[in-house]
Length: 307
Image 1 (spheres, helix red, strand yellow):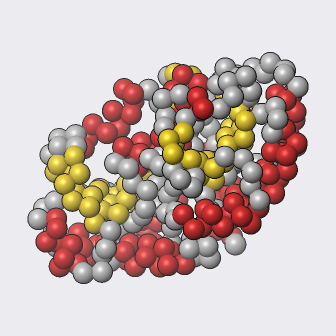
Image 2: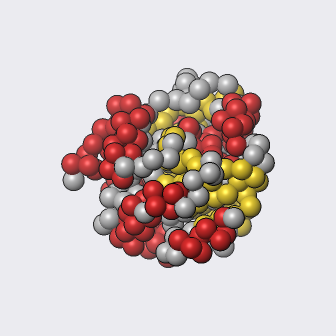
């Protein structure tokens, strides 16, 4: 419980900031293709009623506060659904279809549910943790964002439903050039990129115990695995959600990890290499994936795939 509280405070106090400003969010949303659940048809923001404001709620089925907010989300849909586009956006990290379906049924969600299959929307909106509510005016400018589901959110929704014009919020997205700068160190040569999260071993312990156990087991054995390929360029890429440098340092100490670790700024690397499940090991050659390891149970087999 203490870790859970610390995670929320971390998000609220240090991470809930807009991304580096380069271009307005509204200019990129139409280009991002999501998939509508359950048939996974293509879906974009352009498919929504352009005359209405839009409420995007980013969530995960294993996210406890997301589920706590779902009754309020559905209530808001019933109150304002004729005046505002409501969309439930699953971030599609360590997800499965049945768990998403159960959330929809449990809370009787009536708004469209879509999957951010490659994390593009999360990058565009500067996602740092779920739940994350984003309000857009009819011109697709962000006018409000929050991790809370409270009176402030209700007030902004009421004003949008009344047709009021609201000032754009400051949150913007990374430019293509900034994203490429983050990816540049891995564009040439060979690299072994180990993708994980500082929280997957404990935060998922209740909601996804098998996933949590997998994270703990693989992270505990990572030093032994890297010792088998000491000449390779190893980098640990830690998911940016709910994570700062202190969380990264605690994670490194807990597992006594010897490889360099970095937080995936704004989720760019997770999105670029389409990492939707962790832990995951990728062999990259000149920026391209040449090997992908999901099963770490046989180290000898892992090494054979990487050579």
